[in-house]
Length: 390
Image (cartoon, rainbow, N blue to C red; front, side, top):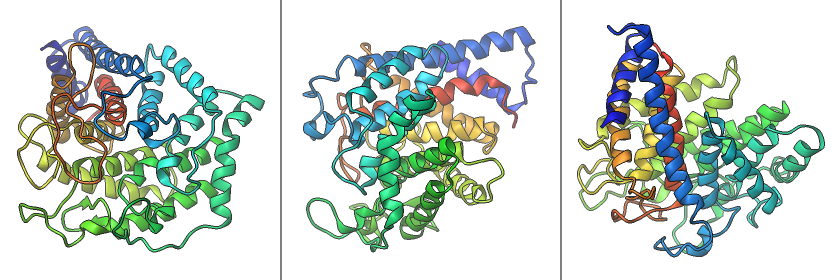
């Protein structure tokens, strides 16, 4: 497969500081071919999803929530689309994002303190960053109002995730691992765009509270929420949900993406990112996928968690936090697995459906957040040939 071969060549270049035994012209050709191939796959997957945004009978559950243009399921897709829009040839996706924002009035759902409802803010802030003056202010108004309301009366609710149906009292804070992708990057991005550090300070404080509550210091992985602490799964192993850890891991990368280079708070996130990275690569299956329950090897492919891990690992290589020689092979295997999960028409399969724990998954299962994760991964894979040194 040419895409896999060119990616492998690009990783060799990254690991050797661009000094592999091929001439400069061929190196540039290899890099551009790998970039074009991964972005072409991303566009095919994105286009399939954009062609299927009216009726959601192809998802197995939560169809009403899937149809909500402001809620987390679509938000995760549009977050991935922002990265694709910023990639070469992505301007038409920028137009899609801006039309979506206008249609949704750059606003939010009914849950004023819920991280899932914050997630769409990442797309709104991205779009605001493309504008100036009154247009920027218009696109930011609902986000600033929403976040300022939280800052005016921050919650000190317990991080214990109570049993029971519906939303839990702790969810006015970030008491589940998914939240680390949904909310903190939006808060950090608002600081980056406005220059007001209060939003990043809040995100940093609450992010650390979530780490303290849910991160297993021995396993270097996140519990999905407090219900899973001390509760082994059917195999007797601790339960670390692949997508739950993928959300968290990608959230760390996205926080680092926007934190100022000289910010003393960065060291905490860089250390956490490296800890997780070192653990994550040991849990990857031979076919490139991560199992739905990370300590239970085997089982079917699963692409949402895998895509988030590929995204984070590739992002770490591209930003000099991870060694291409050490982590590149894992990215290569993971990307190859993700490509195999793309059906001929562009539909991404093997996406575990909405849930909060490891569960069954089939080849036909798809969901928008899986596509969003795939887009994030593909854009970072496309950047690998840029001459990153070991």
